[in-house]
Image (tube, rainbow, N blue to C red; front, side, top):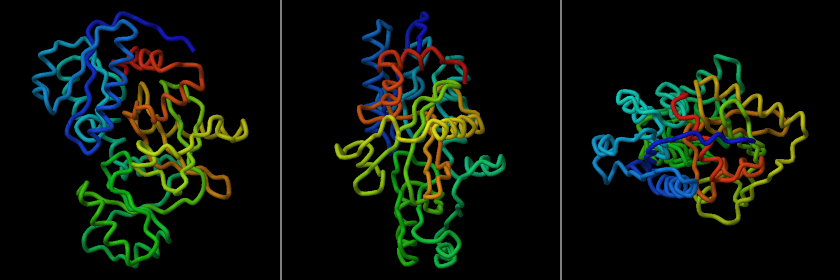
Length: 308
C-alpha cells in the first residue's frame, strides 16, 4: 500500500465530546493526534465538551478536521453537517451516511431493501408484548439501543421474562430500542479504506460476548489474523461488507461487523463510520496486517478528507 502525504495545512483532531463513548473517543483522538504529529503534520487536539463547542473549533481555523468523536454528536451526522456549513473538509462519511450508519434499525431497512443478509429485528417499547417478541425472534435474542456504539446497553436475553429488564437497561442509553435475532457462530469485522477491504478479523471472546469490556479493557479477547476463512470465503465476506458500506453511502473509511452462522452464512450486524483507533481497536490491527502501520493509516484516512 502507498500513502500520499499531501499538504494538509492545520489539522484539528476532534475527540472526547459528551456521548457515552467519551472515554474511548479520548483514547482514539490521542492516538491519532500523536501519529499526525509524529508524521510532521500541524495537528491540534480539540474536545468540544471542554473547549467551547463548535465556536471553539471554528476559532482554531482548521484546514481539515480528523473526526475521532465516537457516538452521538460526532458520528451521527451533526458534526459533519456543521463542518459542511463551515466549508471545512473532514474525514470519513458525509452527513447522510453518518446519520444512517448510527441508526442500526434504519441501516437494517436499507440492507433488507437491497437484499443484503441481516438478522430479523423488531422495535421495542415499554408496553411491548414480550412473549410475542421472543416467539417471533426466538431465544436467545439481542436487545440493543438503536443509536449507541461500543456495545453499550446491549444484553443477550435468554428468557421471555428477562426481556423487559433488558429493554429498560437499553432505554437508559436511547429512546429507541430494538430486539434482534441472535446469530450463534463466529464474529468477523472488516475494515474499509475507500473501496479497499482490509483483511478480515475473527474476534474470539472467552465469555462468548464481545461487549464493552471485551472490546476495550480485556486482555483475553483474541483477534485472529488471518481470520481462518478460505480465500473464496474471505473474498465473499469482503464483497458483502463493501456492499453494506456503500448501501448507507459510506466513504473514506469505516468498519462493518458480521456474524457467520453454523451453515456458513454471513449476517450483517452494523456499520461503524468512525471506528475506534485505540490500542485495542480493529482497524489499526487489520491495516498493520496489510502492511500499513498506524502513522501511515492515519495519513491515509486524512488524505481522504472531503471525499465523503
